[in-house]
Length: 261
Length: 357
Image 1 (cartoon, one colour):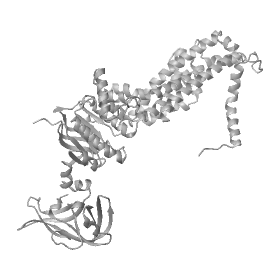
Image 2 (tube, rainbow over the protein chains, first blue to last red; image 1 turned 30 degrees about the vertical axis):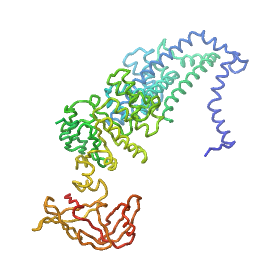
Image 3 (cartoon, each protein chain N blue to C red; image 1 turned 30 degrees about the horizontal axis):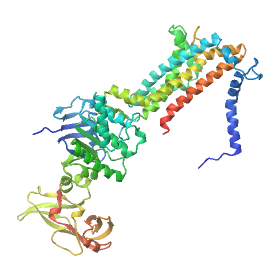
Image 4 (cartoon, rainbow over the protein chains, first blue to last red; image 1 turned 90 degrees about the horizontal axis):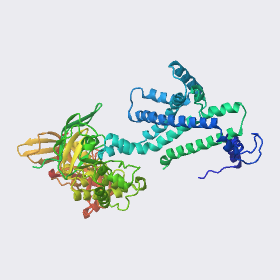
């Protein structure tokens, strides 16, 4: 049966979407505003995008953010794959439930607490805060997401495929490379993109764990907004939204493509 | 004398408290079509996995071509397996699936291409090489799985319930195809199935398994006509069972059939004592009149089923037991028997099989 929508239902739906997306829409709209005043429309222009690319501070922070996101996402997928493999393949090992809970906990842990804990930890062991401490902080959360995504794929992976490969002459490591990995690759790419996105837009963890010279883009935006909102911020925010949206869409397609069939 | 292709000597495998395979000894000849038959959980799959190398025996030895397979992993054994789920690699085309084993063997590219084409022809899938497994029907997947397993020229092909996922019509067709392929290639096949018809139709020899042990080995006819145990008699085909006792008298050996008189037995019938007497439905005799020359019981036809080629009656005896009788419909006398008739059913001595357990 085809669901039918009444006028009232559509109105509620639109109101819901408006609540979610009108502020973001306004932000994007005003990034193309010719006027310097953020709240007054002065015609269409891309001048803030042009100015943005001559703002060295913002560009440096963007680069830092991308680097951190790339390294921490890579680390997340590596660790997440190992954890997911242990969860999916090692049977009911002692402490499996606890392991699972410990993997899930950081996903629901308030970021402030994770951030504070990491800060205290880094101070206690005397690590100087900077690029790598932010990478580690983002990896702790990122690897949990990666584990969940990759585990879902591995759990439904048909073990007889690996056996079939071995039966046909592949060593266990070859069977893993030739069969298991290619089949799980979409999940791993999706996990990477998720972790990348999380890192890119994290503010809380980064502000606790970053040091001089490793200011991430969200931190830079926040500090600039405190001094007054420049339309440049709208422009960089729009670019971030676009990046994140595209990455999430790709991740969704990669995880959903096979499952949907 | 040529060495057997497969030798299992006292092989056992235990999972926790369960003896999945219990002291199994058997041999397979090269080129033989062999079936492991048994109910689920009888250990047939475990036994097959022991041969493939996915499990290692707790005791006993597995020899392939006279070579002890102790410590030889699956990827170094000259046997291939066709999985029940087919286990086709979803990210590879049909061609690459079939070529997988050959690539692993390090064959030359030209040889692989020729061999893959040959295999596609064998399973009648020419033109399907570029497809993905998900684009194939169940029957086509089954044939790709067969081609993939046969491509590296194994000495033995293991087939794990190869027809289970197919619908009935396709199943019969595939049975004939598998037999044809087996005859043409001369490769030994070891079929694992819970379906007695499948085993009887295809295999030259059948090993009937029960709780990890081999109950009986023989060709289909031997197992059907001369079951070695009550289990064998009941698992393969339909059977009527009667209580009785074997006695020795001056005139020879007899079986006293409880409530049904006595029948003379051949002298080589085993020891005197209580027995179960097993008789196949098509070996039963049914008549409206008492014949008196064989074990006989009075009863009433409770129901009948006309199956086209034969008719099956169920006759309720005075003690309430149902006896099954079947006859070919080529026999015009069948029309005379209908529901509610008072009849006499029985069997002659040569139709009966004395079972101890």
